[in-house]
Length: 301
Image 1 (cartoon, rainbow, N blue to C red):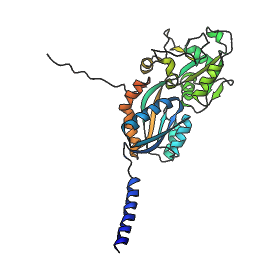
Image 2: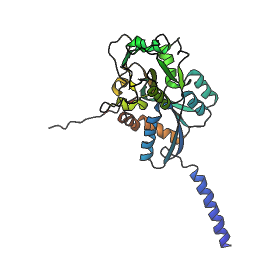
Image 3: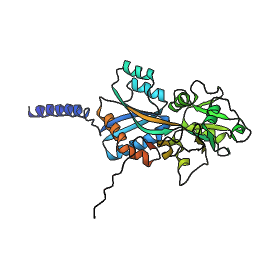
Image 4: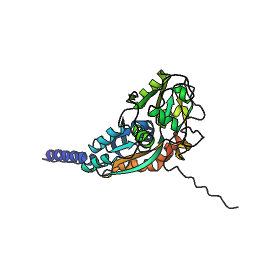
């Protein structure tokens, strides 16, 4: 009789333990998969590692996706946290309302569309007007902008990519990209093609071209990043951290996160990105949305 009571008690305790373990998620513990815009994925992975280093009970995985696909997965509740290189479009907001997704959205960093060319290309800078004419096909040869006499081979990210949408909306407006532009599925593929073709022109986020932007040891063996002059300005700017934060560089886009408001761990990671994560962005070459402030108290004599 005593054995059966003990056995029943053991089963009961096991059931309680299972039920408790399913409710263990807090703002700093639990499991979560994050879907991130491809252009900022390297930076997000650094943030994830830092969060898990501090809070050992948190276990994150991440996937890089095109912006539109990331929103679709969020609407389908396949993920509880996404990071985008642009804000939501009206039809995406409508899709989230229809899916009854209770979410919060907030800007966390500034990124830049960094245009890259082959290392052998003598062109190192463009005016914004020249870049617009290249992206619309009005300028099709590097000779027109001070380079060699050779065709410009334009590479774009696939449709529904956040940075491609940004260029179309902010720079091209009513115009469109030339039909001969070659679509790439990843930033890695684009960089490979830029290295392969001397007449190539491509682009990527700051996280993907960090080696070139390093002021101490600039690596241009795989690509060069172009300096761009804003419209009506004679000063050319590289997409360096300071120029991006102060919007001197003319092609700056804002990075946002979206998370489920009903769950604890997404809230915890969102709070981290908005606070401690700002320093992580700054240390790793990105432009934080709210740069950390230092308060210095001077001791009176």
